[in-house]
Length: 195
Image (cartoon, rainbow, N blue to C red; front, top):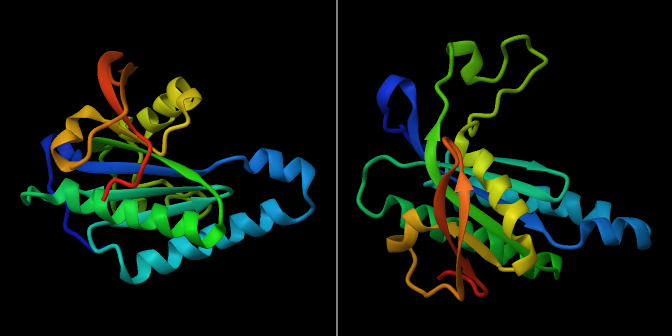
């Protein structure tokens, strides 16, 4: 494990979850032979290489199909969220440049659900099931934000709780009900790289 996460109440750990998703993969998969699957495999390779040496603030990345999910534990260090956002922005820029296509990212601050035991921390309760360490309302909220706001076609969708970690101004702010408790949250939308 790269960082030793800050423990919060009852084993919940403060975190930043970032979802990066490629644009128009479905369209490519139905119209152009082999390009979509090739692009997805390259995305996985880019994420793996990035995590191996360029993302010290991130504990883990999960890559599947046309998506990458990043997990950064926030250790209480001043500026930790900004550093994690900078790393995520670097990865997003690399993906866009290397693949020659656009992606978008959703970033939410929250707490991971506690792991139940040591076996679960390795994702091996049964040996055939992987428990994502990023499991959290923050992760669920990434998908809620994506579903509610994707029509804006922004490059970044960032929970307003992180406004002090971003130096540029959003082009739009929307309100989305997020978990838990379906509370209204402001979501900042950006058209450009963050840093």
